[in-house]
Image (cartoon, rainbow, N blue to C red):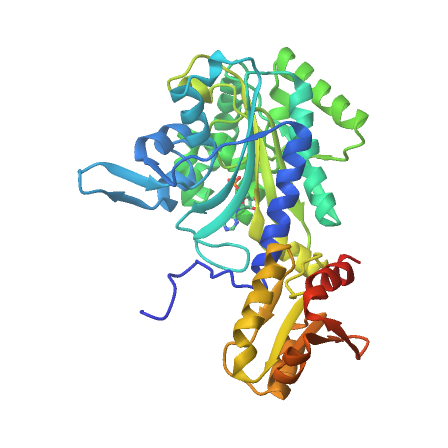
Length: 421
Ligand code: AMP
């Protein structure tokens, strides 16, 4: 136990972490362009927030939460997703009093007691955005276009954007009743999960992965058929904004998504190459949620992308990220006397923003050169007693295999010029 991490968690090591940093920087850049400000909420919240904000009948709340009682006997839960906490922060900090809409993003770890497999973990990372205070279909199109923009800048291909509308509190009760009528004669043949969903949330039966439930549900009424006029008009507008922006989508009238609070637009992005866990992101509108969480009636919409799944898809598609962890310079020394001089030079280079490294194991010059090669340093500065006495260093270009003497006082300027190119 001491030397194994908990099931479903990962260590992200140097070599791999640079890809994460690249991806994180990419999404931050997209957020700057789209005008989204970062929000950082606690990693744990009162359990009640998720029960209310994610929904009692969801898989997350029913079976996947990391819930614990703290020493003050409060029930707390490690956040399984980012929307509920962002809504809580919007209400608690009265962000509704500011000019609307409020456009926020978050990035960080989420925790779910899921069954681990490739692309599915118990601690995983999401990037997500939430927009509060606008019901405009243009905002729906904006968040969807933004998600697709991120995938395309990563270089992912063959993604499918599935789009649906799940209606609103006016039209959904009608659909629910239609669904109950449709499924009632077959109730005993549905999977145990769906038997439970039948009363509480029959829409969820539509996207059950169980084959039998899918067969039974083949002719079931779907959300798009049941939309009220305002919802249908809203959906038409969302589609026309997406068309205007050239964002391609497939209509999927079975897509209801796992969370209870969705209204109107629901979407999910699927990748073909990552096996069973094909969803690389998804989101939707949740116009009732903010009020449900104690705020003023406020429309909202958001999405979340799984960073592990994006990296996995990128790896499967052979995408290389432009990451560079090579030091520009390695300082090799001959003789102990010059070691302090080497250290001083090292620091001067670093202060100039040049990544520099030296030996810390008293290696021989030959071993230092080999080590510098392993680190893939571009230049090696060789500092020996004899050179030090003459006030020079030897600088070796590792790729070209050439070397030349440079006056010690000129070394930093010389390296700066060489590494700038
Ligand atoms: P959700 O919050 O369930 O809509 O998930 C949004 C995205 O987060 C999904 O499309 C996945 O990319 C990712 N995701 C959800 N659950 C997991 C998990 N257990 N492990 C890794 N990624 C996940």
